[in-house]
Length: 110
Image 1 (tube, one colour):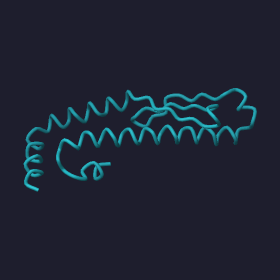
Image 2 (cartoon, helix red, strand yellow):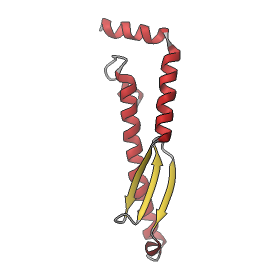
Image 3 (cartoon, helix red, strand yellow):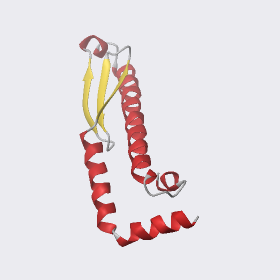
Image 4 (tube, helix red, strand yellow):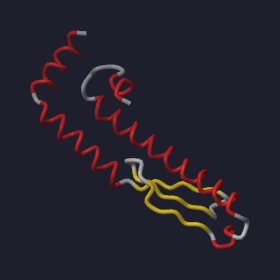
């Protein structure tokens, strides 16, 4: 417990370092490209680690199946890519907070 308090005191004495680490994490997440797909790869989506959809690709033949079918596949592919983005963000946050020595902080912040 006292070790955690000492690390918290060290952390609070240097807020700029925490801000720098958080900014680096934010940049790493923005640079990540995480794929998602559906319909056996006929719909492909790319998301960034900061939860932005960057691109959507739909096979031309799939477009002939009708809008409702295509919409469902696009939603599935987007959700798959965004789930990967959530996992990547959680992993980054866990790495950032693990050095603080405060058990459960990553769960509290995530």
